[in-house]
Image (cartoon, rainbow, N blue to C red; front, side):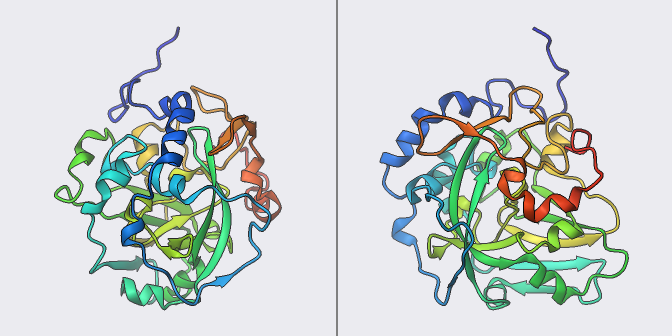
Length: 306
């Protein structure tokens, strides 16, 4: 067996994400049988408009959506975020929007909630580890926020930063990746109508373990591009660094579009296991959203820009 070179932030083989591929069936069953971890604190979101997105998709049970998560600030196990994220304080909370914009501004989370009409969109959610969900997210297009900031002509990318506080997230020191978690998109990806700034799911405010109070969902990309607990959005000229790309650029590209034809260096991406299903299903290019987003990558070598 050929051993790959270890990077500064590479995880030990026993901790890397593919482990969940082998254990997913047992973990999923445990999640489905467990009580809703945040049910007692859940609050309904009012005035949410239902949309036609994802109609006909079979939803992943709430218990699995809120009990089976990657949020390394609260541990590397799938059940760790639901167990430990209650330490995260989501009020008060502010989000700074700045960089290459004419109108930089800091928003209180309640201002964000009133910034645009909230809508429910049912999106397929595909993890790079090979599992997937179908989730009724609640939020509004990120473009609504970016337009208010009025990007300058120099803005080409959008850089995101997560909240990080070792006192509220003591398990983060064991994660093996740098914090605060950072992510990035091209400006046209960020402005695409499918790109959603999420504040809730299943009719309720976003549970802490799912990235409260504010996270990103880009449904045609692998799930780790959906940065959680956002505190800063910065428009920039150059491609920004991203956490998993810094940790291991060979395995986690900047684009990370769902692509069954481009395998992860250590496992295939051709199939995926939908949470709650016994058998694997074929993975769809761009997670099945190709009609809406393929034009963004026209002429690009998707094996080079993975």
